[in-house]
Length: 114
Length: 193
Image (cartoon, rainbow over all chains, first blue to last red; front, side):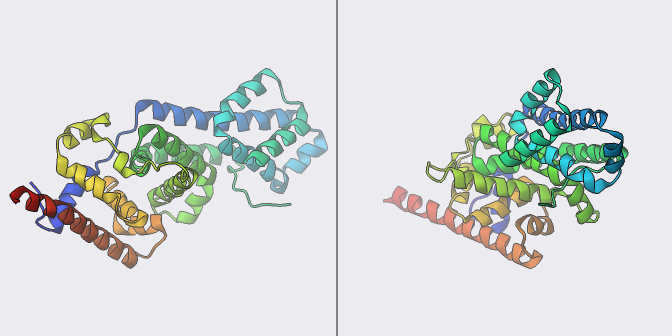
């Protein structure tokens, strides 16, 4: 038993007192679900965005400078509003986004929230 | 206005690879982030929230962190995120009594910690006295003993040099020792008198 006999004993006590804590199983599911929702939402938004683009818009998409920001905005918005991600994703599934304007508005709204 | 917001990679294959790497990181360090969060906030509910936020932030910046880490382990970076979130948590709650480490109730731990800690008053005394240390010293000890982090990892998580971290841990242990000794001395005296 370690009792005030020096540093080594205290370190042993600290090792016992500060044992790693196993996260509850529900936490794994919770984090994974939220991350999935974020990536799915971003993918869905981008897909609907891409399908409604004109040829010239598609052409401009090939320049990364034109699409890094919207993608980043969606990711940032999604991460910051993590609690809302599932709700937003469900809403988007029900009500298809109205083209690029809707996606841009959505991204901006999320950015403002973040 | 152009802002340098980190985003996912453009190439779908690269994105898939990034997600796989993040999942690996997540699985490898979920317990570390949770343990750290738990010892910082003192209850499971807030520790879960903090852990989730930490991984969401990490996901957001993972691509860049991986590039800039140059192959070094990312655990210190993850713990630093949790560290900053915990600091915000305490700042936000500063108007209310802080849920500090002293609030930790070992018997409520879901696994073997319960058997180890329950009934061992000396361990409770250690946890109690930890709360008397500065936040930085307490943090360093949590990282060292709960997460088994090396001096170098702790240094990176706290944004300090290796040497300063070594001194920090040494002083934290010495102060804790003195606090525990000071706590036990009057009890011995009063038992005789």
